[in-house]
Image 1 (cartoon, rainbow, N blue to C red):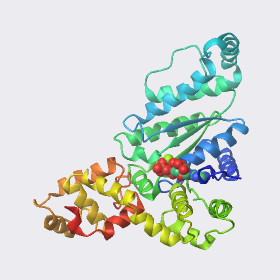
Image 2 (cartoon, rainbow, N blue to C red; image 1 turned 90 degrees about the vertical axis):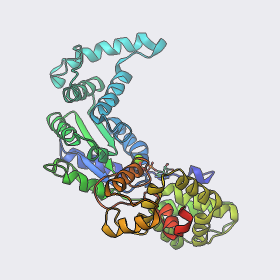
Image 3 (tube, helix red, strand yellow; image 1 turned 135 degrees about the horizontal axis):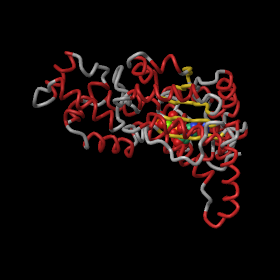
Image 4 (cartoon, rainbow, N blue to C red; image 1 turned 135 degrees about the vertical axis):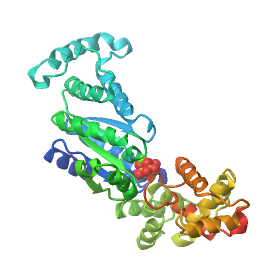
Length: 374
Ligand SMILES: Nc1ncnc2c1ncn2[C@@H]1O[C@H](COP(=O)(O)OP(=O)(O)OP(=O)(O)O)[C@@H](O)[C@H]1O
Ligand SMILES: [Mg+2]
């Protein structure tokens, strides 16, 4: 039983096992799980999929492609190299024991099982060849297939040459299908749209696309039960929690904050708590500071998007012209949208409708009077 609200975590090993079963049933074909931001994709990879994979005799390797979006293939290779080092490089004083292990691995690397793993040759420099060599070598060294977990795959839709990276991945995952399985995560269908839109739709045909399920009642019940423990049996209604959880976009960390604030106030009125949360001075101060840090055009572009206007529409330009001192050109609006995306304020993918990442911030903006923007 959780000691504090922060200890409450939902584990989904069955979901993880289901994904592994699916992966094994279709060698060479990765799974791509899509879900909006902040719903728990990375948490799942880390806390559910990786341990279940390890138990199943796989070696999980994680790479975040958003963090290194200028060089995604290099980021993947780097993660594989780290994993290889973990296995083969003797750690500090324990060197002696580990060294014998390395020798054994070297010998096995040349065994028929892992035939083309030239363990002693230097790795090729060309990223695609390097990926190929690393996957083989790592599987040989670990005596286990690798589970490659690529987080934020939609970053590939944003970089020039992203198609090429997908093509490389596809080739290696197919060729080395006995030695590597792969799971991708991405945020939302917008990402998907950009992948499909990219020439030849390589991603769409290649990976199996799944909607990653958001957390459900189990999590909300745990929150309510912990509330009851603290408040002598009094607790918020599950129905209320469900409704609000949906409203805030199924974000576990956010609903936890809201329930914590309810606990602090001793109230079980969830809707009121959300409203209060929205008006909370600190919250609002944070949003104001964020708005102040933006250029006027960015601020106003955000504002019109919050009002539901398409950022590049004719009417939007008219509205922006009325709000700003200088009439903005379309290219200035584009630049502003791009900057807002890079700052993570707008959802990341570049194709599809513009959307404000944080639904509560969007709600705050939508209700904001235009006078307050200045
Ligand atoms: N199963 C869970 N149980 C409890 N809390 C969770 C769970 N999954 C996620 N969270 C909470 O939600 C937060 C966001 O989760 P996470 O970073 O995994 O989301 P994400 O979908 O990867 O988001 P992003 O799209 O921004 O990368 C976590 O920091 C954690 O506090
Ligand atoms: Mg994540």
